[in-house]
Image 1 (tube, one colour):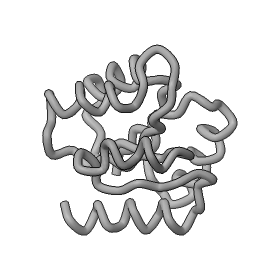
Image 2 (image 1 turned 90 degrees about the horizontal axis):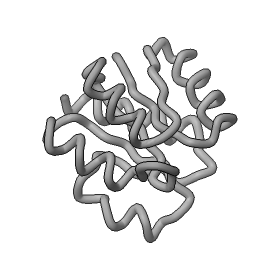
Image 3 (image 1 turned 30 degrees about the vertical axis):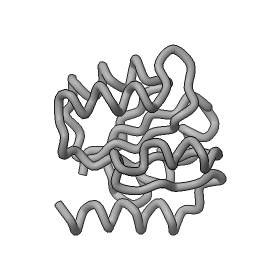
Length: 116
C-alpha cells in the first residue's frame, strides 16, 4: 500500500513514517499541504494521512483540492484539535487525535483497507 503522509512537524513525520514502514507500508511524505497536493498528483497514493494545522496550505484546503481530483481516495486526519476535526469528518475516513497511538493508526489503516 502506498501512503502519503502530510505533517509539518518534522519529528512527528519521522516517527510516524518509521512506524508505518515497520508495518511494511510504503510511505511518501510531505511537510505541508502545498507539497502534499503536489505529491498526491505525482504518485496517486492508495491512502492519505494528514495533519490539519500546517503552514502554506492547511489540511482542510488540501483535502478539498484532493477531493476535486479524487472523491473516493481514503483520507485519515491526525490532529490535536477535536473541534477542527469535526469540521471535516464527513470528508474523511477516520480521525486520529494526537498524540498518535500506534494501535489506533494501524486500526484506522486496516479499516480503510478492508472497505476498499
